[in-house]
Length: 244
Image (cartoon, rainbow, N blue to C red; front, side):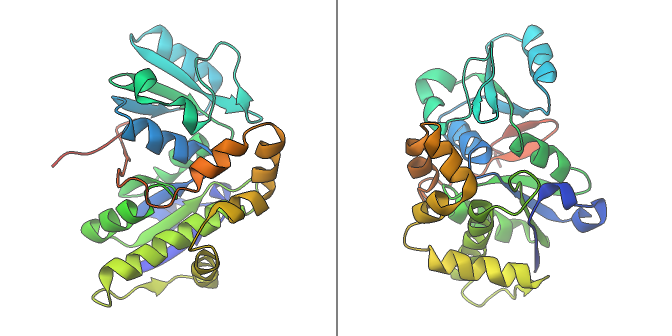
């Protein structure tokens, strides 16, 4: 299995995705929030790029929760922001969540262009993602959202953590071929933070911004390695858990 990492989603091309399995990371906070919403029983998550798309969808559907952020803050008129702590089972169970964020929902939509399948990744479900990758068997592209068009520490470490989980689960039965030195670097970074990813989030520029805005608790939640094995997938415009 060949593994590539795209450090910033805006750099991705259709050729890099062609027929491959894509895992998207926006650890702080979109993909963590989506994983949490799905784990807490929401019916589906609809990722959209613009606020206008989200509002238009909600106008025509019942039982919809509008969630997301701009500049890390709640969008006026929306029910929830982009903190995973807001997406409790009491709020989301059985409901459709329509979400738009600065980077994460863009990255998810971009990753659908040519890939065979898109999985939503985070620290929370790193092992579950690795199991699904091995079950699927396609070559793998780990797509990092990045921060303001540049590499982000937290997404890179999370991508590396999935690589480490792949190696642990496969136990030498599967050969993994790094497509670039960035894959090797991400694995090494993940090894440095393997006992506790929280310092990586605290060290990151975006993590520091969120902490300054009062979201320090989000960093702790987003760093909870392997706290769920839920592996949401993007299918036909919505994010769900596939059933056999």
